[in-house]
Length: 255
Ligand SMILES: NC(=O)c1ccc[n+]([C@@H]2O[C@H](COP(=O)([O-])OP(=O)(O)OC[C@H]3O[C@@H](n4cnc5c(N)ncnc54)[C@H](OP(=O)(O)O)[C@@H]3O)[C@@H](O)[C@H]2O)c1
Image (cartoon, rainbow, N blue to C red; front, top):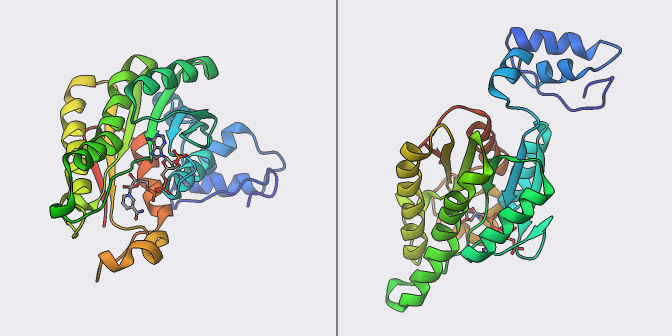
């Protein structure tokens, strides 16, 4: 905890960290100190414009979204939260018309978006023999088309070097019984990310692909025997990497 500004600071071991440590004993925490404390020099901040971004976060009140919200807020970003039943803006992103309305509302609420971050997605789980065509369409709409539309419609609303970060999951390569619709939808998201990246530059696009969250083990752990879960704080850091970094077309796997 910085004694002068009450901000929690993580100190990486680097020359920047030394400056940050010095900041802890200063009597006044300036903005410049704060960015050193976050491990980002003022020069890099200016070059990459990685601080104080306006970020649209879909699914912000869910398990994953709450962790991503905390991580991005701690980095100094301003978050506009979205959900169907909770959040600053209430829209169902599985409906392309509501995605249009969402971006209009976001335009009215901010002076421009620097990143769009998705932590949402709904898919049905059933054995293949019980799935219907509507189930697969629901999975495609709920997890894939919803995120594809966030990108397709979001391009004109996003800063020139802004980024999209989508959510997929381990079931692409490591399926479980009853998970065929989820595997299908996640695969579509990952293929879309790789394909869109080569068209939308200098805007960027990545996906985060976690295995089961530690926090979800009580609910779904039986479907993942022997699988080591991943903590939501680690998943959230992959979002920070995607939003503030330089990569594009990447699937950040956490397994
Ligand atoms: N749980 C895991 O272990 C795990 C592992 C790997 C990947 N994932 C993926 O991570 C994502 C989030 O999982 P979670 O466990 O955090 O789920 P969660 O707790 O149910 O949260 C989902 C969030 O997304 C919002 N949402 C869902 N559909 C929406 C839509 N069509 N439009 C707008 N908002 C929507 C929900 O809010 P409203 O209900 O208010 O709309 C909620 O805030 C999912 O895509 C999931 O497949 C999860």
